[in-house]
Length: 436
Image (cartoon, rainbow, N blue to C red):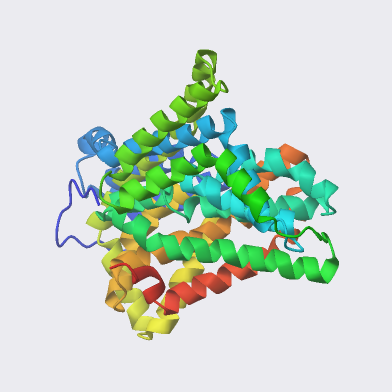
């Protein structure tokens, strides 16, 4: 983590000078004040009242915190996803997914989840995947017999893989905060991310068997599948370039993101599906998303540094271990905290604030830091389909006009499936550490 100004050995009791800013933060969250504003005021309040660090250094900390090469990958991956949609390459990926899974009884639903996984291998963003896949598959799912709210829940759940299957913006951020290579995290996250995707597929298949939403009788046709794959070869080339370059050590994640942007642009221009007039819209869309993420990181870092200087992580570890020393109980406690936090706040501030506090507790019970990162991000991923935040629920509700609560009700089986995988990851470390 960027621990710019840390005073070792400083410990303060939990007095008003700490409680007032933290209570103020909770109140501002409840009032729906923008997250970056809330984090900024909380950080300034802690620094001012506790005098743990010079308040004059706050501005410098903001700019130093986001002056990181790894962060350049975020807007580039977002831009790649937008180019993928505008160039029509995302449709090719969905066609490949349907040709692969379409012969199953729940073919289109399972294909939709696989399509979300394909999109995740390129964009690194769950909301972008939910919007893109939702526009392309929602009406087709309805025509195939799926209830409207269930179709929304299926797309929202499948899109959770956006931050779980590499390349993932969440892993870039947690790697930056904890000083861990994003490439290492991408490699470790491959199996857990695919496990989440498969758990959603299996849940959809089971629910189809019970309710009979879809009953495909189409047989698998190898010739059709081969033709579809050949037609979509350029679309498949993009995730192979990104992941192959990163895993082989040819590219850093940031370099892979830049290569992906250039590759998708060239393909789009050569196929005639992109034009120079599309650039302003694509750049504006990428800037808007990046403009939400980066300020949160910038203002959360000084807050995390102030909490570290106040020995909050050490006090938290001591408090928990005094209650119980059982590693299983502590692991379940961490999962509970992550899931609750994911339900009420976005992934980026959760990672920046919670990871420096929770990592010492994980290390205290013998958990590897890579294992911790995978467990944390996967647990937070459940929050994308759970109220009150449930970002993917809001995206699908906005696209379709369906009630968020009705979609959330349909998403409960998928939440349970994801929680099952989270528990497996928690107590089978080899699933996260297989490549180390």
